[in-house]
Amino acid sequence: MTGRSDISGLVDEIRRLAAERGAVILAHNYQRPEVQDVADFVGDSLGLSRQAAGTDAEVIVFAGVHFMAETAKILAPDKTVLMPEPAAGCPMADMITAEQAMAFKAEHPGVPLVTYVNSSAEVKAVSEVCCTSANAPEVVRSLGVERVLFAPDRNLAAWVAAQVPEVEIIPWDGFCPTHDRVQVEAVEEAAREHPDAEVLVHPECRPEVVALADAVLSTSGMLRHAVASDAEEFVVVTEEGLMHGLEKAAPGKRFFGVCPPMLCPSMKLTTLEKVCDCLLQMSGEVRVPDDVRARAHAAVERMIAIG
Ligand code: 13P
Ligand code: SF4
Image (cartoon, rainbow, N blue to C red; front, side, top):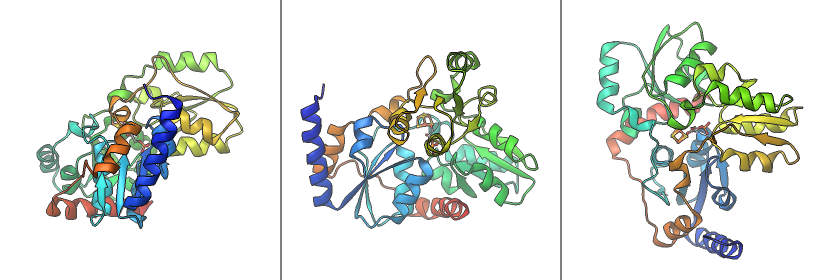
């Protein structure tokens, strides 16, 4: 186990190495608290993509899961993108391959494919546009069409369909194991225990869970909402790593999870030690073949331009 003095030693070493390497450290809102705290920027998928696209740093250390680091490489091809834990994947992203995405499109000729960023570069490369949980309805609306294919998250697809009823959404059957397993009863129980709390739900949850929400938001959307809201208490239905950011952003307010706690094992694979090793050895480089990158870039760039 890493003790408090070890942690501060590691943090100093990471900051020293980051300065020496000209590296920026990006961390997702679900990362371990100490990894979030050492990062230059902590955010949701959309915010992290924007940071990667805009950074002046030569090296991007990405504390998150593989599709996020890959998206950074797609947007910043001349930068060196490193993952402290290259084995950290997203099970939902693995639920559709490029071959399956092409077959899906072939079944629905002429219907554009909107792909959640939680997907591989190869799948993005055969998509018309990407989206994140922060902008999915806007992206679908922006296409101005009657029907879209949506992959890989069936739950996000259902939420978008409710937000944009004028467009028919044809979903792929993927899901996030961490969010999809949350039961209605667990949210109802948390809401009963904290009757004054606002219920914040991530759109990767099932529709019947989303239906219990006061607000349906991306992870950074939840952070902004908690700060701005008049409420003092919140039931937070997303991965528990967000609690750290919520408590920092809105000190004094109270945040409650559901039972059993929501944990994404992949997000927890990255540790301070691995961040330090990766900077020391410049290891865990993420590469995307040029032809895939160019096609995936068009879909990601189109999303960033929308919002
Ligand atoms: P956000 O973009 O809302 O941070 O979500 C990413 C993710 O993987 C949620 O499970
Ligand atoms: Fe993927 Fe779910 Fe983990 Fe997000 S929480 S990275 S969607 S498995």
